[in-house]
Image 1 (cartoon, rainbow, N blue to C red):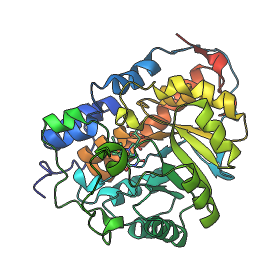
Image 2: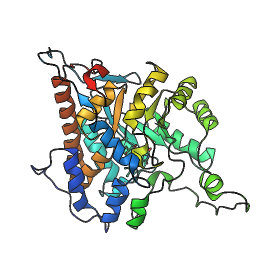
Image 3: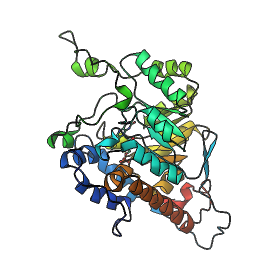
Image 4: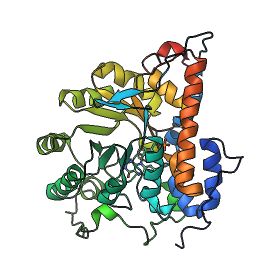
Length: 369
Ligand code: FNR
């Protein structure tokens, strides 16, 4: 493939020991414009930077001489026991960075027993992913132009054994991806949208002279609250809304009886200037109470970040860009290594803060800025 420039490593060099090392190394494994599209955020990247900075500004309070003989990282999500409190975030078009794309990611998820959220925009079909899965899969849904097309994706996910539908609502249109634009990024034609091969070509947008292209044309696939209620009536799977930053929106999700929310700003890729997701988390958790599942992503780079998110009210987190970088460098082996690194970092943080279980990770272990 012309857009893949170096063969993947078949061993992990000693100098790669963290997510940050994979981010650095990944730049050698893809053309600059693809790296710009993956690493970049929207507009001035204020939110992108803040996502990581906000984690860095939170301090951990250690605790010594604690008992760890029955320690565990196990946790329950959607009535299912998970060995670890993290999942793989939905990331589109993984063949951009690896010829096997999602299937290489899945091999690592299988090896580490970590569930995966598959994107509507995957470069491998949801059926082909499901056929190889030994871990629970959740399907990330982007609403389509018609309800029929949307429902067809949901039914395919149900039939293939996906356990939940994650509706992404914070990207009804593509953000102002200025870094990707400057780098001249376009999706290489070799990378398919495998779930949408039968999607009809978008009809030309026709607008009355006084209608706005953005508000009328580009928002034509954007779901509304009533579409979420429609979806509830058409699937038996739990529904999770991804891209919540405000307590009011989270409460509305709870009132509808949804299974959960993902506090996320899409990795700083949609509206620039919104808060870091870790800053938005405490108010969301407080507003919805303890019964609704709250997940978080955007800026998780260390096991200690996972710990901080759990302490501030998340039930689990989604790992995003770091695994894509690991995939680019060393395929399934790289993703497995990265996931093991995050697991070890989380365990070390738990050990040194005196938290033997996931439930024991509370805000009293943090110093907030
Ligand atoms: C994404 N994200 C995303 N989200 C989603 O719901 N569907 C998708 O197809 C994609 N695709 C995608 C591609 C790329 C290249 C990136 C970087 C991100 C967002 C993703 O699920 C997650 O919210 C962010 O990646 C979290 O931010 P960090 O931790 O990666 O910075």
